[in-house]
Length: 295
Length: 182
Image 1 (cartoon, helix red, strand yellow):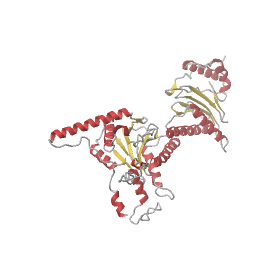
Image 2 (cartoon, rainbow over the protein chains, first blue to last red):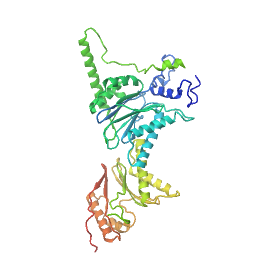
Image 3 (cartoon, rainbow over the protein chains, first blue to last red):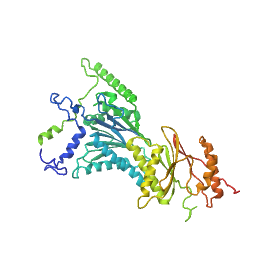
Image 4 (cartoon, each protein chain N blue to C red):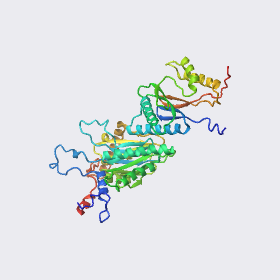
């Protein structure tokens, strides 16, 4: 310990506020598994505590949120386990990655503000306003005494009143917020963001947008359809949660597409055997190892 | 037409609280809208927080509680309310009569203020539990006719809204019919 991560609102000499950086690490949360299974206590559930990924993609007149569900234990009731996609208001939807319990508090504050906004000015808050509010709450918790930052990043999506422009914003534990065409947060978000950078197109319709969302999630979600949830927002409508069967059929078409592509490659270059579906390890980024050694 | 006695003739004195619940109000001019919109915001916040719509009976209890709290404060709301709603689960209609002293009563038909004196007797005579929408509108017409006939004020007519399991809709209602006093 360098001593600069005790009191929260204290800079280290080289300009870092460590607690905030740790919070950003908690969003990815790839690190809780002990690499050596021998060292792990047999009843330790940290093997499951690997964090999840959330994706947001904008189309022409639609915006889609995709979320990786945490793999449930055998006896867990998945139907009533809280989702990582939440409504802030009827026109605004939020997905988060990081500490679930922190998110509950933040979402509740956002909902209260959204409703309070309606009451004071008789209009729903714009998506930017909601994002700004969430980010400012997150910022406050990096600069006050006796608190710790929120260990979550959020994706806020929706449509403003009388407007059909899709909105997608991201907030971070530090209080930074930014607007995106498509983005990912949480575990392996870098992999997914790179995938989105390669595959995002302008003017995508509903089908294309949903497909890209699921396809990008499948880059890092091994277990497939049953561990994905998708929320769709369209102008002037409330959120639509895509039913499991539909997600499954999307996953199936994507997988057959991938297989066909792989088969094409195979016939193109004879002799090489490439895996049909590229699966990536869910370990997350490795940038933190350099910083840890520097401490 | 506008002046010191009439500012607006067709002011909507209702607020929709959730998909199946509508609240009509009368009373002190500023209090009414302030209270109604405060209730509206809190009902919507509850719906958002718990991902469930409150039933009309739950809404009525909440409203009564807020009025009772307000009554015991330094400046209570002087608002009278009628709460109409469909329970989305049982699909049964509910009507609640609430006054500014925080009395709450589930009733088959209701009125507030001077209208009570003229309308309740008509409703007593003609209402039955299985009344249809058309018959209900007709009965409402009988009530407004009576108000036109006997209320000693320049009566401006009514705005009619219907709450069904599909939601709330405005219904056409003839307010221009001339009624001769007997």
